[in-house]
Image 1 (cartoon, helix red, strand yellow):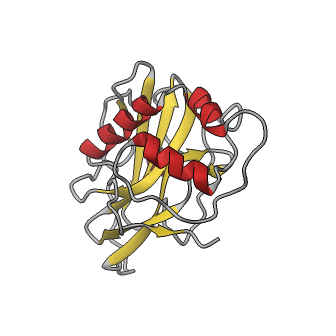
Image 2 (image 1 turned 90 degrees about the vertical axis):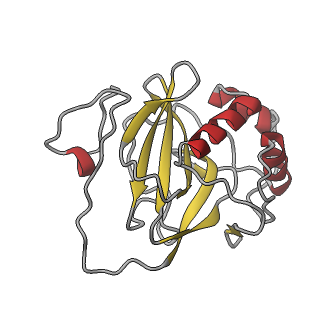
Length: 212
């Protein structure tokens, strides 16, 4: 259902179709927000497995937001993107189409880090439609570097242990097939999210690897 909305945000609220912007008001709490905060940065997260493309940190100021962007194909979750949003992007629970037929996204921002804080686990919320099968095993160091290079986004190459070399079909091919998008299309999608203010694409020196 395109009108799906998690209970924590939308209890007693009407269902809204794609393209409708739902702004969630945050109550100012007594706990001060740190000036500098860190969020997970993950380009491809499997909803049932976790980040398979290398989990890293991105840093935001108190005026920016951590982001969790769920990419759907039709009504099924394809993958999740985690990162830092731009300060102009206060788009909470936004549902919109992408440039690709049948693909759409749901963006969740968290002003106080509760959805994507580096200090909290990534697999912490249930999804309406679990993925039918894993996208791929966690990619190895060399596969992650190849993935970043294939996207051609001038992202800093991570350098940390992310997994072991899987057997069988090339995991990069498996990933592409299960996502239903080529790497060129993935690149366009990340650029679209970036231009929308939903995802900051980090530059060299601005990512911190997850300790192995």
